[in-house]
Length: 288
Image (cartoon, rainbow, N blue to C red; front, side, top):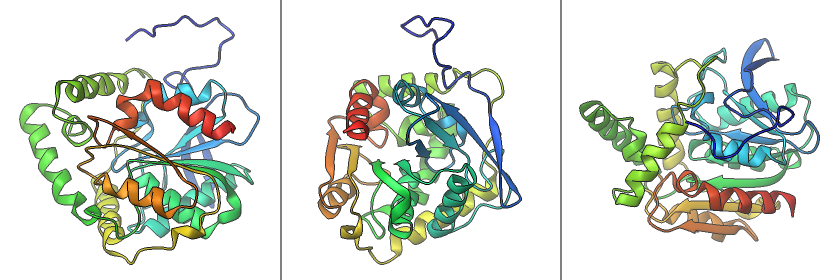
């Protein structure tokens, strides 16, 4: 699909064209893609259940990379990264921190979507000095409403996807309204824009470990989010089925001074559906 704007030969690379690189994290290769300027505090992206590098929305990545250094990576055991995927959010957070340190960064901005938002919260709570600003989208707190039900919901929509020859995200991330259906098709189309050097699909073992981690996170005791003393931006659609939208309001209430963005007639993928509105909001938050 062509982009609606032309780039000069000297324009920064698009996410769809940027090479996949690898960094050694304590003897294990972690793959990542980097776009945007080389200077400044990097924005580290933490993605959703079953996602690898090709599942980051290029409109959001390229939008942020217009003025920020943006790095997407596969955590341990995901996509082409080596090792075995941990079955706890705490384990995933430790691995993400190890990746950040292996990249040589002393301070980062974190952008966690869905499962990535659980991991991002854990990182901020355990390594408060590492994170400057925090964006949480389509996510919720430990012990949050309905988080332990993600597995049955996902399995049902995976079966529905298989029966209708559609990606399960068509059902899981978007509303059933005409608006939501249009947004789902556009989003899934964007994920196919990269033609070369695509990532390895997630393995069943890694997927199972992630589901186990999400369920345990949904059942664990709630954490003291008032300990988060950095600026936070919390976003979601108003009809999130995967991580019910009530969790987003809960996060914004419990993190001191958090900014809240809720999109109407939008689901779990509300920020993808509304990327044209969300990216400027995220950039102004990061740059404030």
